Image 1: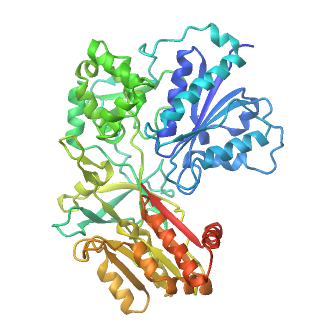
Image 2 (image 1 turned 135 degrees about the horizontal axis):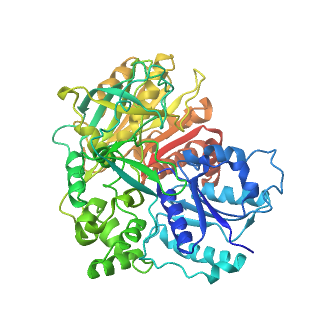
Image 3 (image 1 turned 90 degrees about the horizontal axis):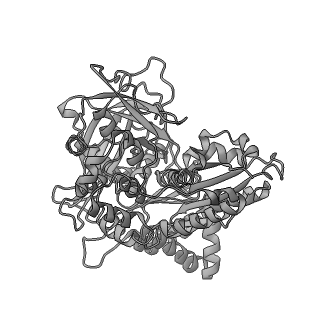
Length: 594
């Protein structure tokens, strides 16, 4: 049998599945195999019937949902009208990327595997279920899974065994080439201009919204800087409801852009055109022509903790013996614990790694920039306001991420640090935004009560919901809010007090550090078991949780099940079943993030 073309299709939300798909493609190219990589939604799914070898790499998002760039593919594949044997020519393999701290671990990969079998595909090996929680991260599963996959591929296509693969430190051709232009200015005019015919803003067409205010809402003595930020969305066609999220692409700081350009000996003011070396599309977010400064500031993720693939690519440029040896170790399966100690645990950034490998960095060729550095991924924030209370405005609540590791310089969140630095008092500031439907849905019926548990910035979507519900005359609202101290980080305190006085809200608060014994929202849920049982069992109240995915959601669920047992006379098993039934029907919903 002749050699096949390998098709690698990915569904990726944060870029990890895309990175893994590209790694598989590099391994294929080293084996002199023809390979095509694309997001599932950029691929014509009807062509699957004529493919012979496909690897599907997919992440699972939120509550077991497929990533945004595979949703259309997913809908098509699950059409009831597809005949049972329609994929009988297809040999395939499925690799899932998940996190076992979430209840629906690798749900998308498992469901895809089942569906492909139903459609008659031949699945070459068991579905790979990579787990971010593993001590060595996802690679603990991916490495042996890939070894097994290539073994199966050689059995199917024996001619692959005759090829001597390229060594790991031999460079592959770049995906793009840079063509520098003399005396040409960057085409930037349309990036922040407002088109006359404004479509509904989307990732490919965000709307530049004016920043109206950027206010710190925690006490100056509090360790955490939290911002209440407001945008003017007049004329944008942006619409949203409670539970929806706003999306944006952050930017690297001027200081980091300058350091990067110095390390790589790039002129930030130089302009270039990109040309694809095969049939890859030029990234839509990059103007043509484009300035180096714009590429580094707005597109290349130089502040992320680099993935193993970065070290694999860096290795191909290393001529210094010591650096070559270290990069070889970081790229190998055996060196992953070393890499975790060097990079992941202290959260070392790509920019810092470049500075640690000066000889190799000096050898980097500009054509490889887009292979080496991933694209900055969009960030999402729960919308914290309602258009019914604040017309033409969109508000968010942002905790500015800053923490210490063994590295001297504090680690900072890219998006929150960038947002905190924007000051409308220094001149007009515009941020390109678009809105995405959230997973939380609030009841339409006027008399259905809602119970919301939102500690910290988790309260943001509930502020939006409360403003919306009060405007609609829905007053059966209970909010459990938790923070460290009543005087330091009690977000929107005066608003909750006004709503309570007006009879629109029952507020239950937990201030964990204001007394010797730490008190959290789950303790307050337990104390209010009688109220909660009455609302849920007798009035069909909907129950919502939003906030940090660490211990809080599980602890709140345990407290709720205890209330079912105590007030409803249920066994532990019955309480568990009741919560599961509530989740299935949408009476219980949660939106948590790590």
